[in-house]
Image 1 (cartoon, helix red, strand yellow):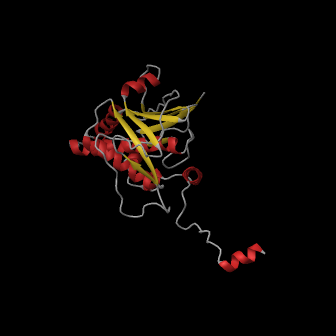
Image 2 (tube, rainbow, N blue to C red):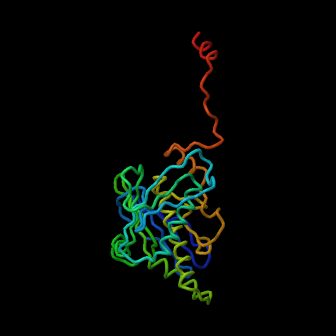
Image 3 (cartoon, rainbow, N blue to C red):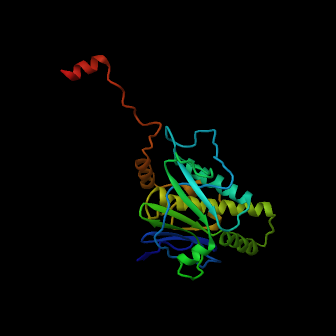
Amino acid sequence: MASTLGSPIGTIGSSLGSTVGVSTVGVSTLGVSTVGRFRKSAAIVALACSVPATIAFTDQLHPYRQSVSVCVHVTEKEHISGPALRTLQEEASRIWIRHGVALTWTQPVPKTCPTVVSLVFDEYELLKLAGGYRDSALARTVFLGRSQTIYVSVPRAFLMLAQLTQRNKTVVSSAERDTRGGTLLGRVVAHELGHVLLTTLSHSEAGLMRPVFGLNDVLSSDDHTTDLSSVETSRLEMRFSLVRMDSPTRATPSVLARSEISR
């Protein structure tokens, strides 16, 4: 049973769909959108990179009294440059801290981490998940029991960017290429983390969890493209017991009040 939601936005876009037990991020090439199919698979919240790191934020970037910590365990089975990986980490972290989730990218993942998700860069695994057919999926999240694993293709993401560059007849430096690629991959990973953190294969009409988005949206500086819906926000707050800053605090009854209550 497969459910494909939405249609491409713009001439170059990425479509996101889901099947029972599988979440898929698809990418369209010059307006042709495809959605791959996933099997069930493993791992929950934790991204780890080759360099121990926690993205630090100095300002209050979320509306909660305390954020929840999520670790990402990263396995690199295909090459991704250091600058692109760092940009991916920063972008995914920037998106999720706004929703009260602090991503930790330390390798190896600390044993004390309460939530861990596996992120694997592996083009070959995406081929296997698609039944041996080369589809246009950028990433897939496989659910297996209580664990989930996110598989991402680095080559497909950079191919998508190359096609956009050719279409616009622009020339970019290797540094800019790494930044754009890392940003694209960071938002793809952030979307897939959404399926894991929200424990759902469902999509919303807009924002981070929308089923289809254009490449220009992926690289946009508009934070609305990575918002969560009110339903998704409530689900996240309930799962991780996130308490809003403006939430009323249940005060301890005074001695007089306690005596009145006991009567």
